[in-house]
Amino acid sequence: MQTAVKPSLLEAEAVRAFLTAAGEKPYRLSQIDQAVYRDLVLEVDEITTLPTALREDLARHFVLSPMTLKKDALSSDGTNKFLFETTDEYLVESVLMRHKGDRLTLCISSQVGCPVKCSFCATGTMGYSRNLTTAEIVGQVLHVNRKLALTGERVRNIVFMGMGEPLINYDHVMDAVAILKDQKKFGIGARHITISTSGIVPRIKDLMERDPQVNLAVSLHAPNDALRTKIMPINNAYPLASLMDMLKLYTDTTNKRIFYEYIMLGGVNDSPLLAHELGTLLRGHLAHVNLIPYNPGAGWPDMKASSRNRIMEFQRIVQGYDVPCTIRYTFGQDIDAACGQLAVKEGKNAVAAEKQQKFQRVQKPVS
Ligand code: SF4
Image (tube, rainbow, N blue to C red):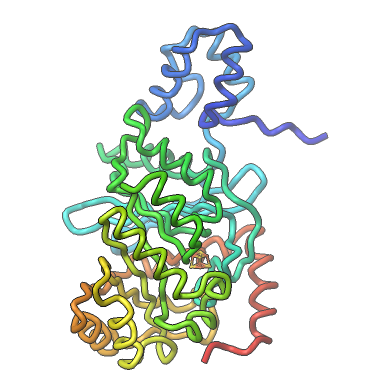
């Protein structure tokens, strides 16, 4: 007989319902939140602000966290990659990056796999299993905060750039953002949270209306429909013209700069001609382009990274259109830190990924 999976203490509604049914006062929930999010207890038993009987009762009905840490890989550049296992045995990744000045940014996942299937992305090759719950999303940050507490640090910046398309899992992601911002929980300012999307146009509008302070990043990767559709099939659903119209409305409304991600794929999207096209597309927009050197092995087996000179030339051309353009430092190459790389190699996600890659190999490669 299978043992029923216990809910976690990060599921506020379940905890609230439990406390109400047990006839407990509402302030008990605040005590639990304080212990879980601020004091970073490791066991339900450690919530010593609660009476012993309630603690024992909670421990019988709840686990502390909805995921377990399966692997913690440290790169030679200080980047940490965390691999978590969900209660239904899927693997989910988060990556902790140390920027200059020791600014810590955690890249978190929002789905198991991804339905968007960008051709250069390891997560895209693994197929899609399910959305992460709100508890599973914030659980990643909580685990990392527990580790950082040992050195007196905390996660201060969050990017939704891990596995999955966050705006497809919109409700859970926005609930997670509210918890991340909550001063009594993580206390991370909206300006330190970035949601990165492949361009789910209607949801960008929802995001703009619901939380305009959160930063928006857009995975662009090509400046025209023909090429973008080849490497990002989502462009069929939301072609560039509709995406750019929405992004113009976004910047006009929020007055916030949008970060455009552009992965540099050798011989695919890195020509000077395409740099001119990108500059023309973004000229006059409140935009910042991030050129991302491709991490080999992440997607198509035959995709390769652009040379350093090629990337610098591309940057120079885009900047010539008065569009700020930087080259992003690539973190953790020696620990498979690119989105989905580690989860693809391990666990049951790997089976789906292998099937997907076999399927893709018989398709026409991106030219
Ligand atoms: S790049 Fe992002 S949107 Fe595209 S397949 Fe990977 S996870 Fe999904």
